[in-house]
Structure formats: structure tokens, C-alpha cells
Image (cartoon, rainbow, N blue to C red; front, top):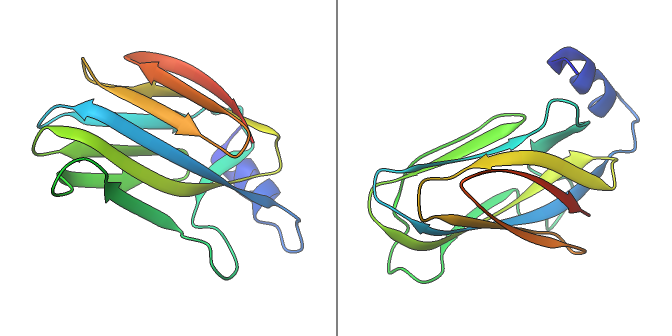
Amino acid sequence: MGEEALFASLFRPGAGVNYQPLTVVLQNVRANSKVFVTIRDDQHAVWSEGKGRGLVGLSFSATRDPALYVRNFLINAREFFVQTYNNSQEIQVQLYVRTAQSDLRGRVDLPPGATVTLQTRADRTSLIGLSAFAIDF
């Protein structure tokens, strides 16, 4: 699906589109490595900041390291990447997915030795390397 058609379906006035929370936990990411998490093109979904009161938009935290060793972070409608400047034991990213679907499909591209865990209220999956994922909301 093209970007224009996706935005027309997700961002039309009065559209009742849900915001689903998603937690992404990156583990054992080496220094100067990049991690990519991408939503498939055929999905009616985009990364989102959420809507309303009390939603976190986007949150990063270092859960095991003394600091958050993130050099670069970029997010667009369907992809985000994180680049580290030091070895990171664990980085937790919390964000929202704007979608009316009951699941989300995509792929991850991780450096050697790294793992990612995607978690919603209903499902959890862990991946390594270059992998595809499907997760229920």
C-alpha cells in the first residue's frame, strides 16, 4: 500500500482508529551497531505518538546499564532505527502503533548477538538477526 493511501485511511477526519501500545526491548547491542524495526508495506499501520491524556508518546530507558548509550534514533511512519555508541545490555522503547488491525507484521534487522523482544498486552515474541514477526494486540 502506498504512503498516500495509508495516510488517507488512517488519518481521515472522524476515523475511529485505535492506538495500540508496543514495548520493544533490545538486548546485547554492541557499540556502533544499528537496529532496524520495520512495519510491512501491506499493513494498515504506522508508528504513532498516541492520542489523549496519559499516553506516553515515545519512551526510551536503560534498564540494566548506568546510562542510555543511544547515539542516533530515527522514526518515520513505518520504520525506526537505533544506533548505539557503547555496548548496551538492554534498551527499552515504548511507543504506539496506530492501526485498526488486530495484529502487526514486520521485520527486524539486528547486529550479531543482539535480540529484540516485542510485547503487547496480548502477545510477546523474541527475535534475532534478520527476522520477520507477527504480533497480536
